[in-house]
Each structure stands twice: as structure tokens, then as C-alpha cells.
Amino acid sequence: FTFSNAYANPIINSKNLYVNNTLLTTLRITSAESIKAYTFVDCHSLETLIANNVNTIGGTAFGNCYGLRSVTFGRALTTIWSLAFESCTKLNYVNFLGNIDEWTDIYFGSLTANPVYYSRRLYLSSELLKNVKLSCKNLGAYAFAGCESIENVEILEDIERLGNQAFYECEGIGVVKS
Image 1 (cartoon, rainbow, N blue to C red):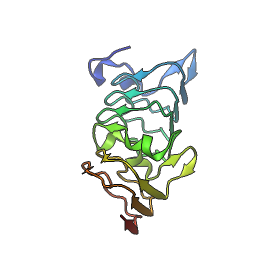
Image 2 (image 1 turned 60 degrees about the horizontal axis):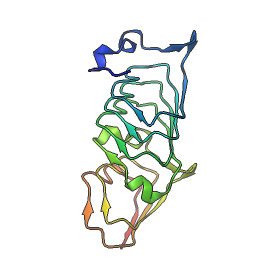
Image 3 (image 1 turned 30 degrees about the vertical axis):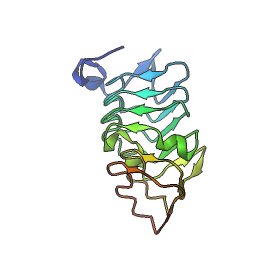
Image 4 (image 1 turned 60 degrees about the vertical axis):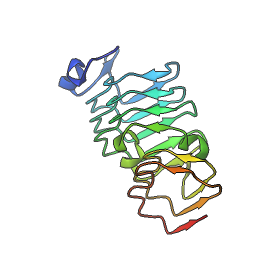
């Protein structure tokens, strides 16, 4: 489905989504390459998202999903558009099934496009990220925004560009080396 705006999606009125008369709490996307804008906006029943093969998440796709607690992304992910996870304040687990270099290649369209801003921690292949070793030339905007689990940052190469708010509210960082 494609919705022109959030108010075109009927979920915005019901706040819940039923599939085959069953309340949707876990969404496992295995074959779609993208999740369109506004697709699950205001779906309060959604608690878990597993999107292993998705490469693009549209703007406000999961905005106001107040029940969303856990998201897992595969290494195919390249783009998350603006406000994709806006107001997902119960998020406490963001797991990326790739490495740090692949995570830093993801384009985040806004601060609240990055679900880590709400979860305050990032897991790489189920391991909590505490030490960041950057070997990239360009670190994208909002890459680690809100990630309080980061304790150390080591810059291994000459970074040419640090994106806007790349380490915004990363209050756990104690040591930065280059």
C-alpha cells in the first residue's frame, strides 16, 4: 500500500492492526525491500519489528508506534527517511545484523529516523556497542545520535566529514582517540 500522508492510513484511527483476526504485535518482513512512508504510522499494538532484507524505510513509516520495543535490521539497510521512528519512546532494543562500517553507511533523514535516538543503545549482531572504531572517510548525520552505550570512540583513519549530530546526546562517551 502507498499512503499520501498519515491521515490516509486507517490505522491512524484504530491504533491497532489485525491480520487474519489476530492483533499484530510482531512484524517480520522477509521479502519486501522497502517499507513505504506512513505504512504503520500510529500502530500502537506493534511491539517487535524484524526487517532482515529491507533496504529502505519511508518517512514516518513507524511514527507514533508507542508500543514498539524492539527492532532488528539486516545488513541490506541503506536508508531510513525522516521521522521514520518519531515518538517510538518505548524502544529499548535496536539490533543491526551487520558491522560498524555498514551501520555508518546508513543514511538517516532526520534525528528521529534513527531508532537508536529512542532506544539509547545499539546492538551489532546482538552485541551491545560500547567501543566505536571508525575507519570510514565520512560519518553520516545522526549515525549514533542518542547512543548512550558508547564509552569509547577511536578514529582509525582521517575522517573528512562528520555528519550533523553524529554523536548527539552520546553521554556515555568518556574517551576519544585518534
